[in-house]
Each structure stands twice: as structure tokens, then as C-alpha cells.
Length: 172
Image 1 (cartoon, rainbow, N blue to C red):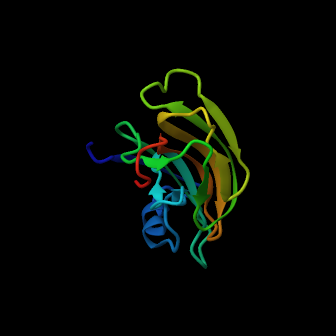
Image 2: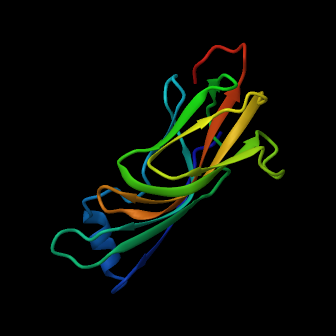
């Protein structure tokens, strides 16, 4: 799969020419928090789709920077975490103090159909039990608003891959 290219659009509260100097020197990452799926196997990192992040100003500056980006190609997960039906998984937003959102669980390749399940994200770590009737490949489509410990805030879309099987070896 080709690497994602991000198209970045920046908007600033204040003067437009300050974006480059403030964004280049900012003390926090200019992206959403890392999202991982913990299923007892190696953790899987989510693939970002669209996101907007507001970055706080550096000390002594007063310009906030909001960066928005969109994946130029399809943002499907490149990997699948193998889990068992009825097993508990955890979606975690690293270094994040507040998360509110929703996850749609779609059968892989059937993203235009209604989700097979949905669940809410109410904290930086959310646990979910894979339904016992689930089998095959699924995509967890995430939409969430967040506030990180370092002052970033915004929203993000991301995706994780899941392979539900009773016989496959657990792993990534």
C-alpha cells in the first residue's frame, strides 16, 4: 500500500505570517495523539485519516495554531490484530486526558454497509468485548475529540484492523 501523503492546511488566530515561525518552534507535536489497539498481542497503531489539532502557543507567545490534515489516499489499517470471539480489547489514546467519541465496527471491505456494532469512547482507555458471533476481518473506524496532557486539542478519524478467529494464531 502506498504511504499516506498528508495535505496540511494551517489556520491561525492572529496574523498569517506568524504560522511558520510559531509552528516550527512549537514545543508539542502537531498531530493527534497516538491511538493503539491492545489485544494481548503486540499493540497495533491506528492509521490516521482526517484530523484537526489546535496546538497551544510556546511560552511567551500568544498565537494558537490549528492544523488540519486529510489522508490523500485510503486510510485503511495495514495490519490486523488477531483476537478470539468474546475476547476483551482496549483502545488507548496515549498521553491524553480526555476523549469522547465513537467506534464503528465494519466488516472489512463492507464499509458502505451499516456497522456491525458501535461503542462509545468515554476515556483515554476504552475496553470492548468482541461479540461471540463475530468471525473474519473487521475495521474499527474511530471518530474522537481529544485533549492531551501537553495542551493539544482537536478531533481525529482513525482506523484499526481486527481479525476475529477461533483458530488463527494470536498476533499482529
